[in-house]
Amino acid sequence: MEQQLRAALQLVQPYPDGVVEVPAVIPGTAFFPGGRGLWREGTDAPEFPVGKIMVLGHNFDTEEKYHISFRRGSEDVETNHTWKNLVQLLTSVRIAPKEVFFTNFFMGLIAARKEEEETTEIKGKKKKVKNTGEFPGARDPEFVQRCQTFFLKQVEVQHPRLILVLGLQVPKHLSSLSDCLSPWAKATSIAQLDPQHGLIRDVRFSGIDHSTTVVVLTHPCYRRRNAKYRRYAGLKSEEAEIRLIKDALNSTH
Image 1 (cartoon, rainbow, N blue to C red):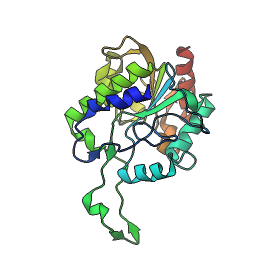
Image 2: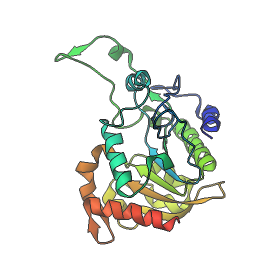
Image 3: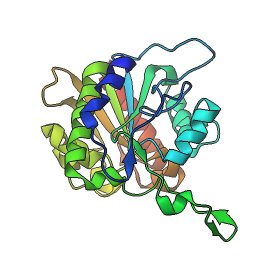
């Protein structure tokens, strides 16, 4: 299945300015497309979690961080804030990481800028390309459409019963793919989604004969800062978000 998606990456080409293709697959645990999108333990190759759970992030990372992960053989799941907080959250609601396809909406890597490839010292530190804010490809409407098409391909291949969307940058790009998600079109805060639209059941995407439940989560990297704004089922903060996921899981059985 992962190989099928890897071959289908041609759907997002050409990559726009500021975005480059992933040159090779990170063999260990890493989000797709930088890695296979699977949780790897030991030497056994994990099975692709068809019919299970998709975790959908914004984009993979910068070229620099990709190469660091490639040399390591995996992303740093123990100290990377996104991975560390995400795994803790999944474990708290009894989702085994091996049952998850970890992927992204935007394909490709944030390209290193020429002026930052040089050894520029700023207060004794090298200037780096940041993996925060708007993804460069988001400024290209045609590339966004190609990534939307590829997202639908991911749903078609995996048939996830639950999609957990990380952060507020992705929902607007999904809003036009299903009438059910139209409330997400202009949401700029968690408060605008909660309590009615943070969890949406029976979502059907255009051209796909498969329904799923979709949930927007605070981004794991900023969870400690932003989870306090969640409101759901009379609960607040992290309790609200955990209940949100549990209700989503119960609705997919």
